[in-house]
Length: 249
Image (cartoon, rainbow, N blue to C red; front, side, top):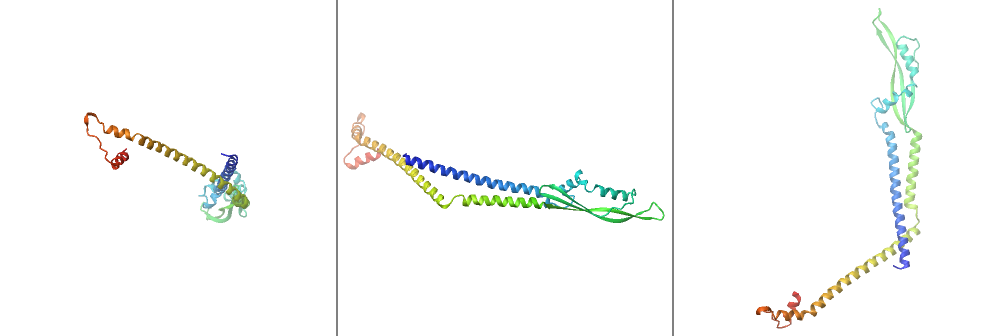
């Protein structure tokens, strides 16, 4: 292979390797974007479950000791009043905003309602005022984290599109394609010449066999006309008989 062909080979190999690495980089980038999106979906999966205590995330959060500190004082006032320990009535609803994870918040609303119970232990029966909290739950996405996620996904997708479509201009692409076409032409011509050489070698061997057969044909004919113990011989009278023997051999 000449020096020019060697330089062409090195350049073409470099182009092919760089394209291969670019392709692997794009695939890795797509996998990274997908994994990033799946991680966010795992964080927010609880939002798609029922907003009640049957949702294990809500049950876990509202029974957490840190979360119960938000409403502990109000519930103590309610219990003391209902048990007759205190005459101080609970006032107002309770609102709590509890973090589930960085992407989800739990909004808890304890609505205060009053009702009356009849105390039959005294005469006459007495209606006793009681209070209770009726909870409602709502899981919401953390808007800040949601905006950050969408913004980062858009940025990564834009970078991916830029790498795919705008990393090389048309002149660079045309130059690389020309190098690769020349490289393929040289390699195919080399393979074709090698194949032709192999075919020529096989043809030369066949010619040698043919020459050997023709050179010794007369010895075969003489031998077949001098058989042992006067056995029947092959009679050759004309050219057709000779052709039959030759084709048979």
